[in-house]
Length: 306
Image (cartoon, rainbow, N blue to C red; front, top):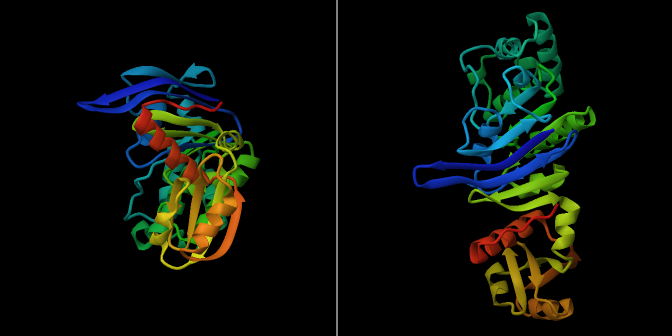
C-alpha cells in the first residue's frame, strides 16, 4: 500500500534520513520505531507530502501521492492540533467536513466515536476543559470521521493512562479487523510488540531492523533470560558470561554468551540477589533494539530481516 524508497533528508549539518526504505502492506499494523530523534516524524511528514525529501520516493498504491489521495489517509500528529476554545463536537464536525464528509453525517459519526471512546458526555464541553488524555482521544477521533484506508499514528498513546491505553489498543485492533492499514510510530517498544505485524526500526536516520516480529526474534535466538528478584539491582552488574544486560527495578533481561549454560548464570545470580523467577524466553523487542543499535554504533553496519 505504501512504498518508501531510499529517503534522504539533511538539515544544515544534521542528516535526518539516510536511505530509509520500507513497504507497508495493505491491512497490517506496521511499526515505524526508534528513539526520539531517530527520523520517524521526518519520514512521516515526507510520506504525507508535508515536506520534500532531498532524494528518494514515496508511493501510495503504486502512485505518487496527490491531493485527492489525501482524503483516504489520516494523520495523528504527536502534537495536538485542536481548537481549544471550541466545543468538542463542533471541532470534530469541522475536521470531518475538511475531509469531504457532509456536516450531518460528520456529526453522526463523531457522536458514535465519542461513545466508543467513552466521551459522550464531553461533546458539548470546550476542548481546553478536557484532560490531556481526553484531548488525545478526541484528536484520534478526528482522524476517523472520513473513514480513511491508511492511518498514520505518531505516538498515539501519548498522555493516556493505562486504562485508556488498553481502550486505544482495542480500537486500533478493531480498525485492522475492518481492513484498515495502520502505520504506528513510537519509541515505546512494549506497545509496538503488542500491536505490530511488522516493524522498521530506525536509528540516527538509518534502518537498523526491518521485518516481521517473529522473523526478527528468531534471528536473535532464544537465549534471553527473564530474571525477577528481590535485592539491590546494581549487584547484577557483577554477573560474568553476559552478552547484554537490561536492568530494571525488580527484573532483568539477560542474554548470555554463546556456549554458557543458563544454570551457571542462575547460580551466580543467587549469590547476588534473591531470585524469585528465572525463565528462558524470547528476547523482548526492547532488548533486541538496544542490541541492534549498539551494534550499529560499534560497526556502522546495517541489519535487515525481510
